[in-house]
Image (tube, rainbow, N blue to C red; front, top):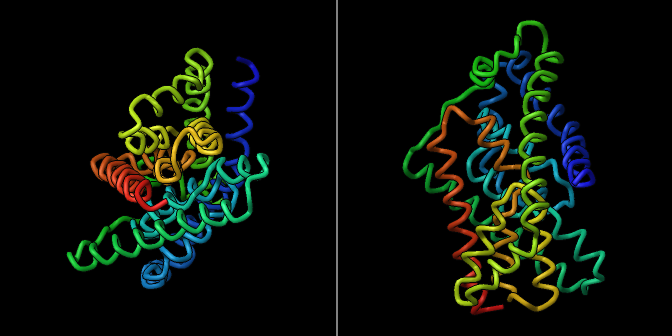
Length: 280
């Protein structure tokens, strides 16, 4: 139990540099450069899904967390956010490497995840532009909700934002670690394999758990050939690490929007999983 709680603490500590740099950048954009820079970023955002999908493949835990905060301030588009979420591998890549999986298999999984993320991101942004949906939000609106005292300086404000989010992540991660200790990861494996025809639905649901356990179980079951490649990809697509957790915290004044993003992420994971089960 203590080891699992220590893991929760270490996982949170790893995120702090990413979170601080993200909030510092956001504060700088708001206080130093004004609306012009935000407009430039939004125009450059047309290529955001490609950049986000590529960066999401890197084996680190902080990029999806940073992306959630950037989206909450509307610095990046929904398509870019989804591209990052879908391509993020969480614990998949370290496990594949430690299990000495073939390089061809690793490259195939990364290419599929990245490709689906980038494609989905461009489609989402295109549909939103076609429907002329514009999301208006600014960094100062988040500051007002968080009471971060931005007028006292961007460094202090970024520290306050980082501390608030970090304590929230630590509390949820600790609760999840206790839950997994009491229930066991075997329950996840049993759930995934209970009805083979519905495996992509279960893996995509398990992937949504804001903890590394989901991606660990899915990757191991795939390597042991208990589940197919399509089901594995479906679950790994929805695994955003703590990205969703931070989205619901940082974007808490748009709860319905957060639920729509959650549903969209799950839907893409299930659809991709079902399709790839036929093609893999």
